[in-house]
Amino acid sequence: MSAEAKLAALQLELPPAPKAMGVYKPIVIIGNLAYLSGHGPLKPDKTLITGRLGEDMDVEAGYQAARATGLALLATLRENLGSLDRVARLVKVLGLVRSTDEFDAQPAVINGCSELFREVFGEDAGVAARSAIGTNALPGGIAVEIEAIFELR
Image 1 (cartoon, rainbow, N blue to C red):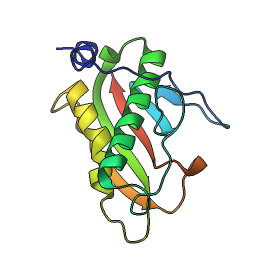
Image 2 (cartoon, rainbow, N blue to C red):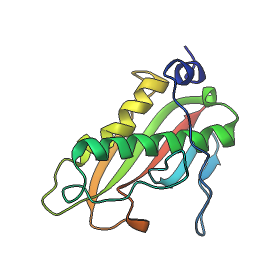
Image 3 (cartoon, helix red, strand yellow):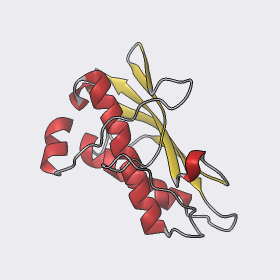
């Protein structure tokens, strides 16, 4: 099943592709690689999920924020590629989690994005090398920021 067909079967709705909010491009394509800049947890109403894991958010809320971020990344891909079916595989994911010093479940939070990509692109093509890192601050107080690299067809 193609990525577009899986997205439809899962009844997932992509938010509007986010626009750059600074001096950067949301996506840069070089050869057969698409580099996506850090995206935040964008909701369908164009607002962002804010909070700090271990303070006013638990792992499940962070997981949902990371999943929303994954949907925003997919929206950028689709807008720029025309179809998610142009993705050959996910190569790398870097997830940043705004969290307290004591919070240590960053990988469980970023699983929200990783599991989404696995659902859409499949067990092999949708699972990549990954880092999940805690940080004390992110722009606008967002809960997570995720960037990714995809190989294209």
